[in-house]
Image (cartoon, rainbow, N blue to C red; front, top):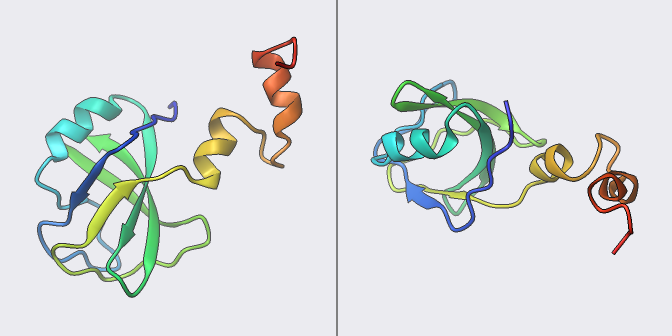
Length: 115
């Protein structure tokens, strides 16, 4: 399952999200599912009082989420909460760096000249 970059993606929760919810209640779930395909991404949810990062994958025409990623905690969030794609440490580690954040060696594999 590969990481998917979603530059500029943002939406809002359409209904309340409980701390243990596993599906993301957004109006454009089918469109996001198409963009993700068999890949995944990380989304940042913020209601102005706190932030939670979730791992998002396709589940039919819906978006399945793994809660509390990147050291964040699962939150109960109200309708209208901002949901957006941002570059996260996990996404960068999965695409550019290894798990110990050693980017230089990983970049040399992509660009052997070191440019």
